[in-house]
Length: 88
Image 1 (tube, rainbow, N blue to C red):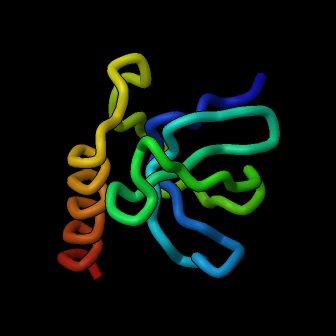
Image 2 (image 1 turned 60 degrees about the vertical axis):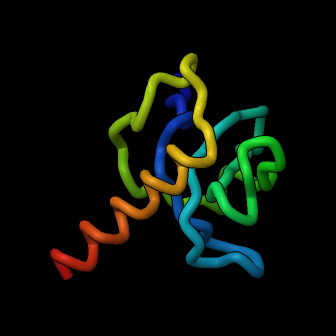
Image 3 (image 1 turned 90 degrees about the horizontal axis):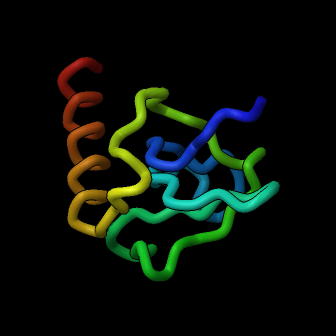
């Protein structure tokens, strides 16, 4: 059974955006749609092949039914970056 990816923090592994942090907002077959809340907003997500994203946090960030808005997406990414800077 395939694991649900909506609401997870992910990093791009391939493409011109390699290394960019995103939140997965939708799944569709082989593809996931990701947003960063700034350039790629939740109403204009980037389509990425599943193979080209690396899941960073396994814990579901929010209930997918409640939806993710751009402010929440930016907050999630910022908190992760701050946490990473403190640890590393």
